[in-house]
Length: 97
Picture 1 (cartoon, helix red, strand yellow):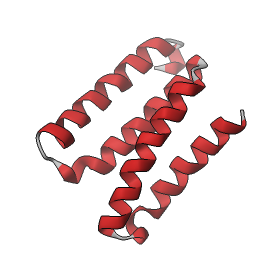
Picture 2 (cartoon, rainbow, N blue to C red):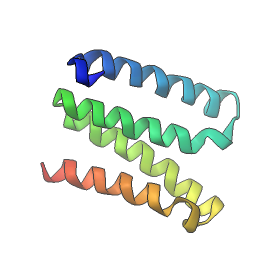
Picture 3 (cartoon, rainbow, N blue to C red):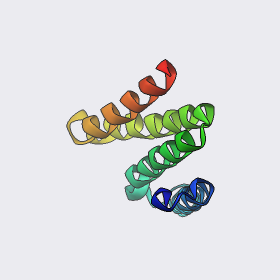
């Protein structure tokens, strides 16, 4: 979407993806999709950065990090270390900006 320049539409679509995964994970008990929810938060964070909303992006990174830390404790660090590192790196870059 950003190739076409419609950054607001991109954020709206990411918001929809997040809402769908939240519903599946939180309300329908599909815990196996929690990693996908964490990725959705990070993707939305990137879209928010494109709009210049770094505060929203940091909050989304925090949500992703919380999920990934919980998954790492449950599943082991080896399986989630890469995704967790990327989420932390994204947040660090935002905080530096």
